[in-house]
Length: 238
Image 1 (cartoon, rainbow, N blue to C red):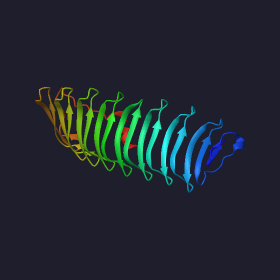
Image 2 (cartoon, rainbow, N blue to C red):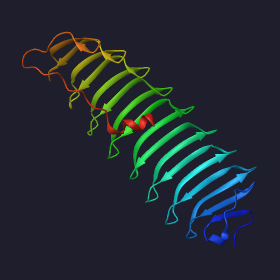
Image 3 (cartoon, rainbow, N blue to C red):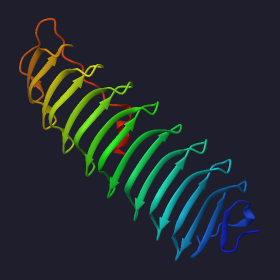
Image 4 (cartoon, one colour):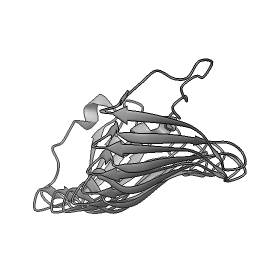
């Protein structure tokens, strides 16, 4: 027997497919009669938490609404019931903390302002260890980005201005010693790049102008290989 104020759609063919209620709760079912989604309406608009269910009846998503717009904390769950994502909305726009997880371990911690990344964004590796900390302003990288090794030591520090590298990029060895200092201007290598040995002594200098070396490397020397950003960097632009 249905609850008072509860409309149901889907399920057996003779149950019909009623439109959303002006006020009240709507329960949608699949062709086997299993719950698929539960939602609440007020004045014909979604108002309250929309709950979506998996084939086993477990909750897979909770989406908060107010006056037809997402408003509050959205949570996605994995098959084990652990959070996959926790996103905060205000009046239909991402606003506040955002967290991503994998297998119960943190993957990304960030903050949104008016739908854009703003503030410190922290990424984690597959084991949940710290991988990268980046500063954002209005959806663009602005400030210091630090990349870490799996053991927690710093691999690289970069400075950004309006989403472009600006200033010195510093590369470190596993013992914390500075190995390379590379100057950037407007996203391009520009200035004298200095490479250091394990004792901190400068062993090579290369001048760059507009991202191009002013001269060929010395005989027998090879240019430094760039450090690739973590694979999960793509998440930061989503």
